[in-house]
Length: 369
Ligand SMILES: [Zn+2]
Ligand SMILES: [Zn+2]
Image (cartoon, rainbow, N blue to C red):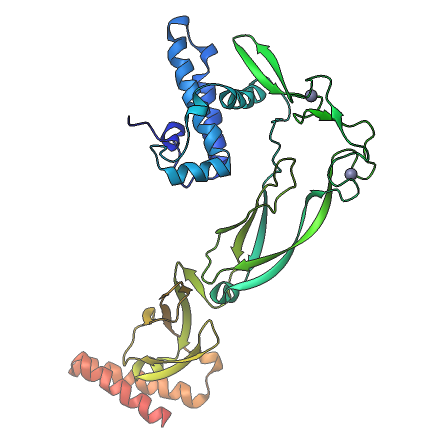
């Protein structure tokens, strides 16, 4: 059977972020909540609702999502039967209830640590070469005093849920299995709380983390460090390092290409000339300026752009012809410009434009020799 992909169910793209998925899910849930429909339509709404919850249960969990992505839209390599009935569906519902009935903080039986994200600014040179760095991330880490148990004594069975970690609650229309609030779904409680972590088992700490930034990374790209998020009961969350590339004073980047500007004088523009510029990796490159170049012409210098894997981008040099100012000219220069003005006026009357250009060129040559 051709089943709709979970991405289609939620109306998001395959590359959607967790926030986009949650946003899409919440708005769909509001729209399709069975309580909003008459009895005749309720069954249909319930099915749709169930479909949305099923998709969300998978896509909100990075592990399940990865597994699902590998299995394809048909859900080949993944056992979807667990979502048709039983607890997984109700875990999804649990989430719905917390968003609808103000259930407070979501407590699930597999308490995974929170994912964290961190913005890291690097220079364009660092992006060009690739970069190794260390950052200090404030995160929840295991309390070393109690080894994460939250107590100096062994925990005891929770008497509210009899150690199951879950409770059955009736919410009007639904029966919901919820995490036990007394033990946070762990099934165990502690008698004397560890005084270092107040029974949490975790403490806020700065952890130094090494980060390898691959060569050619783009602005806004994320590096995922599995298990480097907050410490959790069942597993730690992940850490996402979002890369920001600082504005460069010479180069602008567009994907794998780099752009820069260079100023030349009218003399250099009229005659063919050669100039030197420094590339992003501090190499001196010779650039031939063709005779009679117009201002704003872009010259392409192959392979001096960014390096991404095996491919190398181009460097585009925008050539700007700078008009000199009389304020900074010598008297001789001012005279020469006036003489030039006369010559070009005469040749405009009598000759073609090409020879006018030749005249100006000769004039410049006399001037610079
Ligand atoms: Zn502790
Ligand atoms: Zn309990």
